[in-house]
Image 1 (tube, helix red, strand yellow):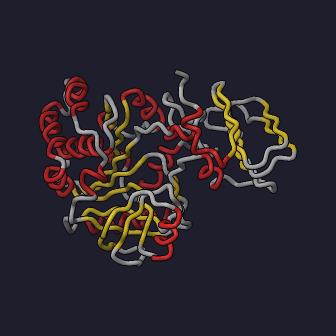
Image 2 (cartoon, helix red, strand yellow):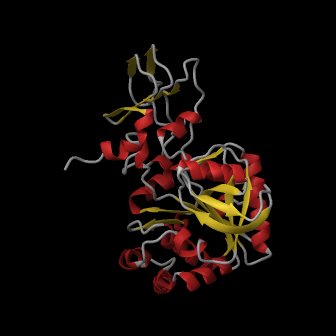
Image 3 (cartoon, one colour):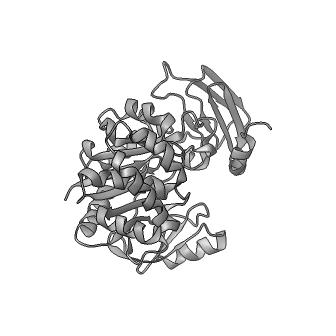
Length: 357
């Protein structure tokens, strides 16, 4: 059975302003200063389970050229351009309907484009085990992340067992909890972070979408005759915006009886904010994390710190940055925009950076 990987790459990543902006969101940026963008790292971690010509990317129309530039090995007709964002259920349905035209027996992995996984070999084994399960059954398998702390920023998967690295039944999906509830989840041992990675046979997800999201399926059925034709873009612009705007979690995962999870200690992070980025950059003796170069930088930024502690500085396109006296701050500069904000207040960055009314 052929494996195909669908990468969802339409998000804006506004909590990482000013590095991530609508014109160039975080999935297309070398956020960690490692010489590769997040979407390139995503492709790299899935190559052990799938050849590059079986990768698909669903993104916004405005990002198609970025995908082509950063992932030149992916066939052009497998870069799918949403005319407007309608959340993950329509995004996934579009990809699966199109894959189904030429590969009706496909086994499919769906993943976000902008997460980090440190334990890449372990991750590949987990995905392979999930694919083996879905190839032989009508299960939908989601990937759970063994929590390392009582985090209130993630949704949780309540599993029927505390076991790791085995496919087990999902009892319930939980929304982002309070700190006290998150502590209870961590102590229980059978709650895992929801990474938003799903594995299924094409026939399974098609059936589940028809059962639980018929409106979206009706749009896809109307759209399907245009696939791989010159009229696809026009049909998509007309029909795709009529899809119900709903996540795959609400549309299918919380309604289906076929949901399973395989969880592991994968070194995963969604890099959703500056604190999570700071955690994954090697710190100096003062606890400072610095990104002074990127894949587009002509030269490395000269970052000079004086009496600075526990601060992240991301300034890969500046010439010289001098900082004195900060403790626990974010300093980020990109394309003439500058952010200086306490790490403890990063939840307000989206509000602070919103356009003036």
